[in-house]
Length: 383
Ligand code: NAD
Ligand code: USQ
Image (cartoon, rainbow, N blue to C red; front, side, top):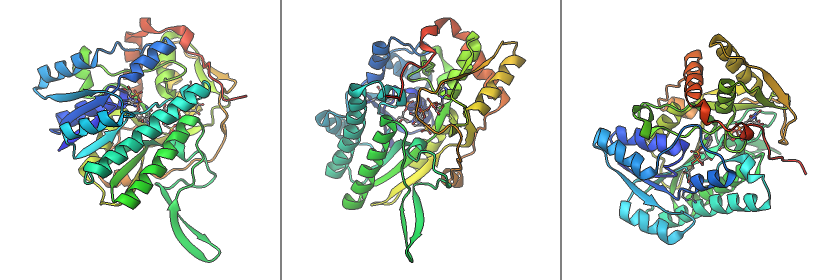
């Protein structure tokens, strides 16, 4: 099967492209490389030195004999997107190609607008190109668990059945996202749902939790294939950041009380979930939603686990409770369903001491590259 991975130079996309290539899929990568540019603008670098995409792909071919086609350009440019699809003719499109940081989207008006234009227009362009010329292609779109927010009831997978005044219906689950970035994902979901309904397109929205870890079987094969690992206050995410903070002796940065609970998954499960989604396409006209995470943790739980693992490795790990730069509930109910992907055969890698040890060792290996000025959060949600 031919699969186009949009955003294939990024954290989830690169691991997925190699994994699918290794499984025998014919893979193309489309990426504008804008994420490398945003890093330059923020004056941050990922913990790991990541090589130019052409070199990464060349090395993969050298090691495995597998070719990956490369298309460099921006999906907000409809002409470019359309040309790429006609050249590659994908049977499935995996769409990771968005601005994905909540803090980045909250820097100021320009970053909020940029995030929403980039994400919403890019996805709309994909829907139009599919409607025009690729109506049978299956869109596998990365959404986020953060679309739901933290309601005081169980979170279902995309839809909820409600009885109201004696009548009953199954409706899209209410969305209460917590940043302009998370809102862009909600707008995408609505647009995709509508396009499926009116044009008979087929799409799967993967509401992914926070991803952690760096090594997959494929990216661990060579230094040139290494994946990015963000630790800064804008693009770094909770568990990855905590491991890197522990490695350099910086107190772990828990925001507020740390009772914020989220769904999490190992990057090795991200790539497998994508494969499961594309290998089991949904029917025409259907907007299918899967919640893509394997476990739920509060931020304090994670900090405690990293502290314990760090201490057992001889590191001096402290936890700091910082004033929360975000506006979010710090103690709340959170119980989300995640049975669809498990039902299709996902066998999760649960967070373990050995994974934490390996992530800490990985962070220690590259710790000289850490710029300590970028650890503390600088972006605030407050007025
Ligand atoms: P990333 O920033 O590492 O990668 C995104 C890639 O998309 C980058 O290489 C970037 O250059 C590219 N891109 C962005 N806009 C583009 C455009 N208009 N045209 C072409 N390419 C473009 O992000 P990631 O962590 O790999 O996240 C990938 C996707 O998964 C995002 O949609 C994100 O919302 C979702 N997601 C990520 C996480 C996580 O923890 N990393 C969790 C849940 C959901
Ligand atoms: N947090 C801390 N300390 C930190 C970093 C974060 O306490 O140093 C807290 C945040 O306040 C928040 C939680 O940890 O309550 C998660 O924050 P995060 O930065 O790890 O993740 P988030 O902003 O939610 O975004 C990340 C990805 C995004 C994806 C999302 C999945 O960047 O692309 O959509 O995870 S989810 O959280 O399920 O919406």
